[in-house]
Length: 479
Image: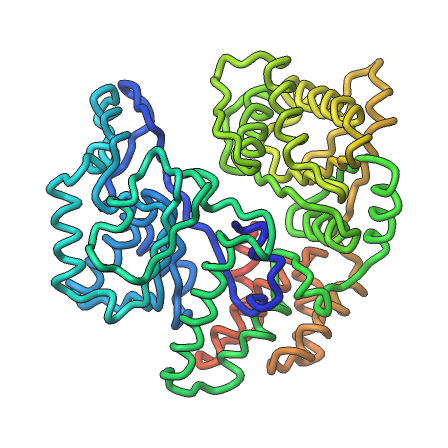
């Protein structure tokens, strides 16, 4: 869903984020704890309060168990008269009355939220009754999307209240791919877009006017973007690294390495979108403590899921099995446009496993070259670690398939240009002395600059000096 959302210019003024939580169908004895719905909902509350204390209108988009978590968070906020700031809730295939798959709790060791998913359990029945008694949907705009061929959650569970009109059923979609639209015209996305537009329009009409400098969504959110989309192109500071990368990617796969926060991923996302390629963006930061093959298996599982193949590769999958499944997923993802697969946040340290990962990347380039009759596949990688140190000696062919480019921190002139762009857009004045301090403290890291101005914007009423804000940002970024 996120891949299509970032392409929609009508929603380019909206900031978005993802809240993730641990879950699995089976929990083995002494395995990772599976928290209860209440615990995950409390985590959602902390996530919103910690990351977005200044946001006035928040819309929750929830899939499956996420719907129960969102409803519990809203109910508890209303009961305690806590300011939740939730303006809307859209639910995709949420088991509001439970799921038959909860039978797996018999085989799972103390799996808290799976036990709560039993059909019409006391927990779910109580939550559904509270939802009606507190008339939540008269206070918060709500919409339900039903997957027509959902084998996990029945329509009766997704729509537990007789006579509901705030819903839609999308025939032909299952429980997993109900949130996997393929285009802006896909009904799975259209319902989300319409819900967001209508909910925000309603809240804008009743909201108390605020001072422009504190709530200018089209400028504040965009000029300080940290996730490149076409809608923020006018705020993008182009450098020579962009042209070097674009030239390299026209005839080769590409691996960019360099310090964190210097815009490596933004360069690759922009390159892909400006070239008109179809983009699949894979972020691996949460996949820690895995071997190279296990990491590749998880990448393959993500691509299988995105193309609607409801297959999960087991942990004991061989390299050949993983490569075969990659072929299936990529064949399904290919269209008449080139396909770019961007992989970032590779959670491996330099050494043996990194060398194995590089070899698997090489194998993937060979695999996708055989599919070039259908369309071109471009592999793009972004990492902090320079992979050249882990390429095994005697393996020069990898350089024929992947170009490796190392990015340095930004030059001071580029940092100054970025600051100039920001201050021309935001109503924040920067003295010559502050400018010199920001350039020096940034150490060539644009992420520092944007974090600094985000905090400066949010601290308008506190009269904090730039030096004080800079110290906290440097501490957070460990500069």
